[in-house]
Image (cartoon, rainbow, N blue to C red; front, top):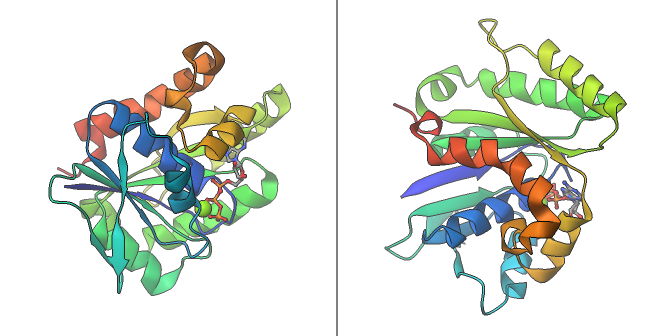
Length: 218
Ligand SMILES: Nc1ncnc2c1ncn2[C@@H]1O[C@H](COP(=O)(O)OP(=O)(O)OP(=O)(O)O)[C@@H](O)[C@H]1O
Ligand SMILES: [Mg+2]
């Protein structure tokens, strides 16, 4: 069973939005998917409770003392995390997953905070190098060029230890489609394709990465 962790200590950066949309995508592609929602706010669980009958089923994983239990046939568990995860809790989450998706908001303040978080993440060097593959996704990017240019600038500045570039996968625009899909317990992949064509295109690099061996430690 595969575990995909969605984490960034910054509140409101899109963890639950990205977790639920990954879950929706995998479910409509025939996988048995569960979501483990570690956030006491339970946004992902609420989304699942709103989910409509006709939509492919996604299970709520049970969490007891930090351990996840899911039905035996589960292919993938998406782990949604609360804000402000640091230190030992961060290390514990990183240890349990093979793949990590980090949503980033493109504002100055958020990018600085993300830089500090990524430094902390890389201080867990052994874990990061061997046990987990990670990718960042810029979320809620406004479609004006200024914000896109700034984002490029910051992403180029954020260097990993060893001088490698941040494994940046895609940009997701700010769109009411995400708000509407959250309200309905659906992913954007379960909305009318004509209304979400652009969003689906933006998701494609992330989903191809997640479906490939590149996102699984060798
Ligand atoms: N790309 C987007 N376009 C428009 N709205 C978005 C987008 N991504 C997220 N949102 C909205 O932003 C808000 C915060 O998103 P979300 O709940 O996914 O963040 P989070 O990181 O899980 O927050 P928390 O840290 O509180 O758990 C939600 O209302 C969500 O619908
Ligand atoms: Mg959340």
